[in-house]
Length: 91
Image (cartoon, rainbow, N blue to C red):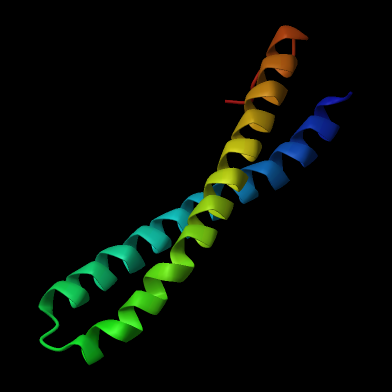
C-alpha cells in the first residue's frame, strides 16, 4: 500500500469520524433540550412531543458512536501501519 492510498482512505475515515462526532453532539444537545423542556412542562400535553424526540435519539446515538469507533479504529490502524513501514507523518 502506498502513502497516497493510505491518505485517500484516511481522508474518508477522518471525515466519517468528524461527522460521527458532530452527530453525537447534536444528539446530546437534543437530549438536553428535550429533558429541560419536559422538566419545565406544566401539563402532560406539553410533554408528549418531547417524548417523541427522546424515543428517536438512541438510534442516532448508536449510529454516531458506531461510525466514530469504526473510523477511529481504521485511522489508528492506518497510522500505525504507515509509521511502522517507515512513512514519516507530514508536519
